Image (cartoon, rainbow, N blue to C red; front, top):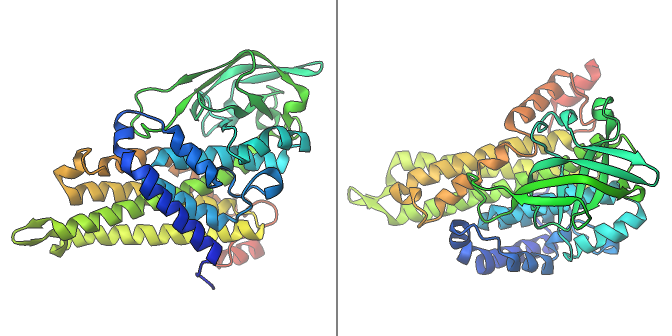
Length: 404
């Protein structure tokens, strides 16, 4: 078992870390307070190749592995969650879905400019009445000759009002449940497409969250991604990719909280000595260490499987669940270590706390991931699909397959 990083992976880690230190952190608190989306920072991410980091070079991407993506997401979210969210929706949910299911024409028109960072992409799945229950979506796409007529609404869509492209899911057969869902590559400039920003959110103030509206949008038939009725499969594949970046980014939150808490605990004194000498403070620091290293190991396990081309739905789910919960706990503990200063915006710790709450909900709530893990273990759900491939660390899995 080799935990070392390759020279390329270390270089990526160091480069993105420097970018965060120089371009994101200096203005992170100010941008958060002002609800300002820093497009120049996004341009900088594009210049580094982060908006196409795991997309092959033939489609304009950087052609790196998933370990590099994980390391990059950790560093980016150590600075600001809004920018890691962009990697999730732009690369994980949208671009990787197009890479797998798109036609060559779709890849040329949409994937390549996205991978180069020339166009921004989002993922239109969630609706007011359809979150975890995807099959309850109301958006429809009715076939009329060489076009589909798209009507409906999507909400809680990251970068909805900024994106040039959207991968949108709609019912082409409303009576068929999840088997009647199809996916479409949509251009937000098309007639009938409109957007609105979501206001008064708890966190991720420096990011973009909004709604997509479709009113009799005429969608060319060649914009259908995959086949009719394949949308649910495509959405679940995309979520596997997006959840991975969420988990990796959560490691960055834990690390940021740990580093800032350690620094503060060494400097702040009470009762004549640094608060880091107090056992209750040490208890909080220790919990952050545990949360970071266990989360990082689960993320790297998923990355290893992804780089081997092995399906990793179970492992990615486990990493997303554990890492996001660990991030929220770390931010909670960091505020406690900082005391009243942690509650103010001065030290920026409360920003991590607010931002860490959303990932426990989106791309599968904690409860959904707990259900998935239990059903895998009980044999109610096929292990990573029909193949049954799982991480070799999961020693219980072969025994379960044998009983089946």
